[in-house]
Amino acid sequence: MRKVYLDNNATTPIHPDVQNAIMKFLAENFGNPSSIHWAGRDAKKALEDAREKVAALINADPSEIVFTGSGTEANNMAIKGIAFQNIEKKGHIITSSVEHPSVLNTCKYLEKKGFEVTYLPVDSYGMIDPGDLKKSIKKNTILISIMMVNNEIGNIYPVKELVSIAKENNIPFHCDAVQALGKIEVDVKKLGVDLLSISAHKIYAPKGVGALYIRKGLKIEPIITGGHQEKNRRGGTENMIGIVGFGKACEIAKKEMSEVAERVKKLRDKLEKGIMERIPDVKLNGHPEKRVPTTLNVSFLYVEGESILLNLDLEGIAASSGSACTSGTLDPSHVLTAMGIPHEVAHGSVRFSLGRDTKEEDIDYVLEVLPPIIEKLRSYSPLYRKAKGGK
Ligand SMILES: *Cc1c(COP(=O)(O)O)cnc(C)c1O
Image (cartoon, rainbow, N blue to C red):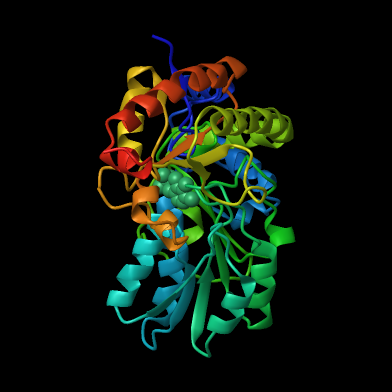
């Protein structure tokens, strides 16, 4: 069966050059980078090479990069790291209502521990209004955490503008840039952020490794205490295989990013236009322009996203409804709900996320297979019959 993978926002396949770099490392290098002997020095060198490559992609200094066990851990480290510094007097945190669960649930946890959290609203396009951020700042605001690119709808948020508001008020700014990395420019200096999270497996490297950028001079409490690794900022022997792969993937992204973005945007636009032309009653979710070139989120009215996915899977097409972390529950996506999209429309949403390996034939195949699936599902749907005046 033909296989088409359009779920690159959930995870990406390993880039062949990343695989080669990992295999070479595995064959030659096994030391613990904290050891002072030759084996340790070899590992330390590989660790620091990777750190330089990750730092280069986001225009940071290598000393500002802390490797973590995931993007989720980087988000936890940033938010709890600031919160735990204020453990006595607590304080107020501002985030948005469309963040990844690793930010939202960390904030909810801190609310239970006595912190106060404001969740900024979004408009019907899923955009955040910087004016809302300005209005929600309080005397005791200790952190603002807002993502750069949304994983479900692909929206790009005005981080630079949001950071300038934080700066006027001397509040540290954390940005979850996991979905931005390798897709659009992420430059910590231009953005002016204090903390920024990234993850390897969203950019063609292995799962189980991420990084947190911590601006030089900013102190945060470590959440994983242990040895002196990562300059006392994150204990635990480093995931060397993952880190070597992450470094290689960052090096490749720096070179290939703009070419890939241009090519993938054409394919995404072709998919979007093709769906709109071939299938009636489809609604685009997210901002039509302020969006990464890789993501297309649409609602097919009168049908369930889950049924569409099962039928697509039978044809070898992998896509997603909302985020991988929340699928498996029957609640509609918190992102679409925050946008004011009615539950029945949100339930019909499907996310297609393209990547560097997506081919024109993949898109043609989806455009051939999808319309009859929707037509079939609608023919079973009482909602559809009722809406079209039948019985
Ligand atoms: C995937 C993702 C994360 C979590 O990264 P993991 O490495 O999978 O833990 C965080 N934020 C966003 C926006 C993501 O897409």
